[in-house]
Length: 316
Ligand code: ATP
Ligand code: MG
Picture 1 (cartoon, rainbow, N blue to C red):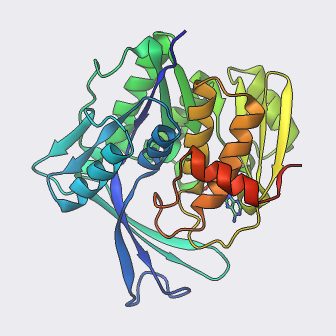
Picture 2 (cartoon, protein in one colour):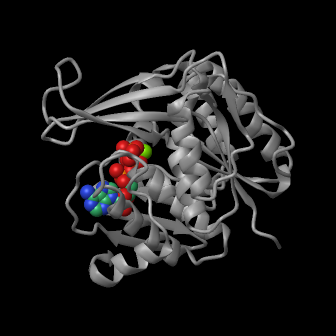
């Protein structure tokens, strides 16, 4: 059996990161960027770095920001034939500023940019041989939601696989159309990548174990639970592996979840064991937070192996 092509669909953008802690986005600060970003793009970039065949579907403007992301994705081995270069709209942009307690403020310029105005090439991959990834935050945008759900249905009905990072933030869950799309995507997904807070929003009345049981009783075959600095748990095929968090200096946590997911799905799709995929993803997430910029913390197998040699933690 050939390994499937991992396809990620959704927003591509550049991000600017404030260097001042605690001042939010209303005050003048120094920023660095443009950093290539967008959760689906970070995920697929990491999946490619871990050795999978990949394609990105999304949009950028015909401008320097878009060029910077496309150059990065191509350099890391991501197929970009599915990226629309839109001459009439600018590339999406985000700004982020952190507080001392780890909270962050975002401003996104996404709606009505090239980020949510793209076309989906239906012949990009064979749907039956596709592992489609959906980062559910994209479903809050009506234009993208329509394109993503059409792709989810096409891949699911052709027998392809789907992974979903629920990103069940309150604003997403309050939007009925986004919420319905999230649940439909989760119901089609064999691989789910929730954080602990996603599980609390999705199943407020259930314990974590009960939520996992419910998801496994539906379509999910593999679930990875992301616990931030506390590490991660992976469950599937009757196995469960808990990984404690590696002790690292957290510089910029944005993108760690997508880096974790890209590592995990890439390795599983190439036939790695659940334990190996979880261990490498937990290390990749830890590496990701040590570098400023959401995609700058992505890494390849050699860096992750070296990190694991020098860092205890991991399997609990
Ligand atoms: P996002 O806020 O981008 O949605 P997330 O909630 O999806 O992120 P996290 O749990 O923050 O994802 O991070 C993903 C994984 O990265 C964790 O499960 C863990 O393996 C690793 N990780 C994240 N933060 C740290 C940290 N401070 N120290 C060590 N490992 C970390
Ligand atoms: Mg997340």
